Each structure stands twice: as structure tokens, then as C-alpha cells.
Image 1 (cartoon, rainbow, N blue to C red):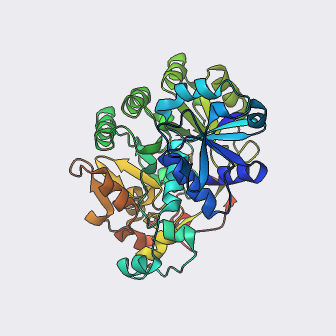
Image 2 (image 1 turned 120 degrees about the vertical axis):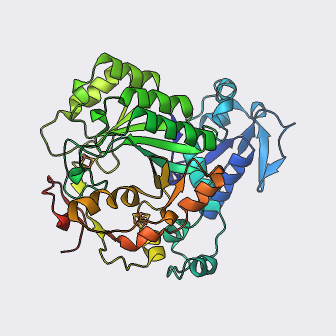
Image 3 (image 1 turned 60 degrees about the vertical axis):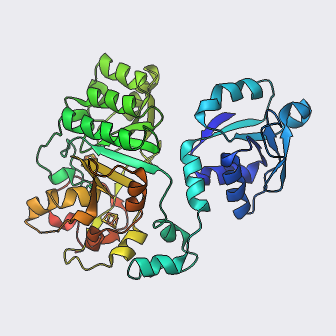
Length: 411
Ligand code: SF4
Ligand code: SF4
């Protein structure tokens, strides 16, 4: 088996069944060994192509030249390659002559996740910095929200507000949005600017979405521009699929040539999801169902509960939020911490005549801030707007929106 590993959860699952050996003895391998050791998992061996340019050991594990190891021993092993994509061809040539049981490649996303989880943090400092976020030692998921990542894990470029499905309680407010397309010029300019700040890298996954992106007349130009500027990122086109089988040959060609992943959520409506998957396969275009709606899983919804009084503790909300320090959002030259802050103060306020108040603390102007580290810091800090959040409701069966405010507030 040869596959790429994206998350630490996946890595841990593999380690339950196999003892890992690593290929590579640089920073990536060091981070992986440290992370695994923190989780009581010991690496079997560290292999390299030559000993001259590598340390003799890595965190207590001997570094071995791969050609010095008998082929029969290697044959039973699971290898995790710890190197950047730049070395991929060379490494494939070296390890290709051995028959490992499994060959796993560490993706940038995995490495980022590992480095983030290896970071040292101090609960007291976080609590005092953020007006008592009520954190306690050991709540790792909450604490890590405040730790700047070394990259942006997931960045949304919003290309339109509205949608042709209108789900109840849509957390992008597309179900109550007026028709609104953002022009190619505006979106492309933001994409180019983000690539300039981030050197075309440091962003793991980019989602082109809205609203329903297949409604956008300039979608293909936007996809090409995204790939041109971010050659290494996973680029996801997140769609409800209603228009997918109506796309022409050019659509499929652009997706194929630009390595776009179509991410499709399965709704309980009359659509042939199997045909969509098949079509993407026949066009050699990556296709997957949205997280939480796997092969047999039909979409359920949750309510993003808005506190209309705006008196939630921002740091507390931020630390409990499923998307904080993860799902950042770019729209019209501004970088927001989440889709909620970017969309609700316009769409929700307009529809229900409310006054959720956004401040200059809630976004970065991407044309004024030049340093990517400022983005990492910004993503990891609670925003003024977090005072309007009250968490998520339990999941409930999907249905269409009736455009009522109760779809977002406690009843
Ligand atoms: S399909 Fe997606 S964007 Fe459209 S209303 Fe439903 S959740 Fe919102
Ligand atoms: S405003 Fe803060 S708490 Fe609310 S969704 Fe955004 S990041 Fe999460």
C-alpha cells in the first residue's frame, strides 16, 4: 500500500497496526518522532540514503543507511517518508527498489498538524492574555486554538453569497442571502495578494465556495488563478452537486489540469450521487464526499447558535469553537477568522434587521499586512465578534430553510 497521510489521527490509527520506520532524518522526521514519543509510540528505525549528510541518531534512534539493511527485513516494514515534495522523485527512486509492506508519505498537512501539536504552551499565559478563557490544563483541543499554527490549515475564498439549495440554518447564511457574485477581478486580486504574502505556500487547503460555487459564471477562471498562485495546496471546490452533471467538457478539463478536488455533500434530495462520483472518476478528477457525509451518510444539520445580546465571553467561545484557528475566510480584501464573522454581520443583519457589530479587530486588511506571521497570530486569537457565538446545537435532520431567525438562535 502507498498512500499520503493527512492527519495525526490517521497516523495514530496506522501506528496501532504497524510499527513505523521513517525515511529521512531532518526536521520533519524529528517532529514526527517527537510527536509519536509524546503519544507513547516508538519508531522502529530511521533510514536515510547516505550517512554523510545526516546525524548519527535522531532523538535516541540510530540513523541507518537504507542500502546497508537486508532486503528481507525491510520487506515487512511500514515506512513513513519524512521529506518535502521537492525530493519526491529522488526518494521514489531510492525506496522503489525495496518491497516495503506499506509506504506512507507525510503530507504538508500532517507535518503542520504535528508541529502545531508539538508546540509548547502555557495555560496561565493564555488565560491571562485573553481575559480568562477559563481554560484548564489538559484541555488540549481548547488550548491549541490559541497556539499560532505554522501555516493556514484551511482557507476559504468566498466567490458568491447565494445558493440554489437553501438549507435550514446554513452557517454561511447562503439560504437567506440576496443574489451576490464577487467578480473574477476581485477574487483573483485577493488570491494573488494572498499568494504574494504566503510565497504561494503555507496554505494547506483552499476551498472555493460560497454559496454554491457552480453558479458563478467565472468559476473556471477563478480555479485556474487559484492553482497558478498556489501550486502545492489542495484546492477544493465545495458544491452541493445540483449542477455538477450539467457541467461541460471544459469544466472537467480545467478541474483535471489544475488538480481540483470536487467536494460534494450528499443531501436527502433527488440527485444521483453515484453518477457524479462516476463521472468525476471517468474524467480523472479528484472527488470526495464532504467530511461527515461519507459514502452512505446523508447530510444532517446543526444550528450555529447566535447570542443576539453579544455577551458571550469571546475567549471562551473561541476556545470551544469548531472552526476557530482553522477555517479562515477571505472576502473583498479582508481576512476573517471564520465564515460566521464575515457573513452574518451583512446577511443576517440585513435579513432580520439586527445590529451584530463587526470591528477592525475582526479582520486583517490583506493589502496592508505583509507578514504571514501576523496572519498566523491573528488566526489564533479570539475576536470581538466571538461574543455573538454560543456554540452549536445537536445535529438534526436536514431540511430546507424557511428563512426564519429561529434557525440560528435558541428557541
Ligand atoms: S448547500 Fe451549502 S451553501 Fe447552500 S444553503 Fe446548503 S449549506 Fe448553505
Ligand atoms: S466568531 Fe469566534 S467563536 Fe464565533 S465562529 Fe467565529 S471564531 Fe468561532
